[in-house]
Image 1 (spheres, rainbow, N blue to C red):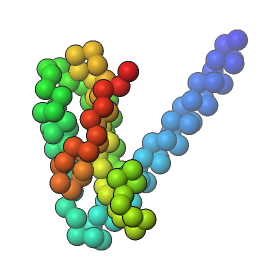
Image 2 (image 1 turned 60 degrees about the vertical axis):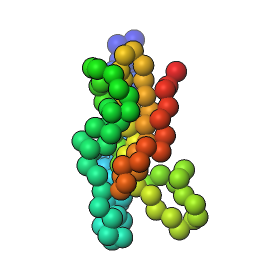
Image 3 (image 1 turned 90 degrees about the vertical axis):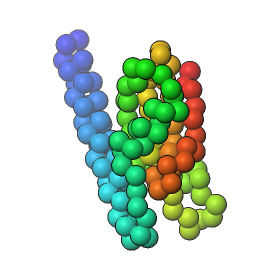
Image 4 (image 1 turned 180 degrees about the vertical axis):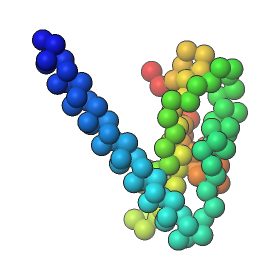
Length: 113
């Protein structure tokens, strides 16, 4: 049983490494594409500040913030829209927030169940 548990943990660690590598590549792509298009991106801390103002609770903990090219907000196939995808916890609630990484506009503000 102990060997099985160790094997499962090893697989989970390996998969999480793949996920982190993918996140890094996507952020690198988004930053490069934004630079190529002369877009000035807001920082992660600025995106978190915008999210915190909207959540308007004390004790906010940011679980994750990823810079992505989010096609949910495309008007056409050739569009490019960098988005900070933020997960936060405050007041016992989980929040899923998307913020336009150029304008700082909140695109999605969802209370997770």
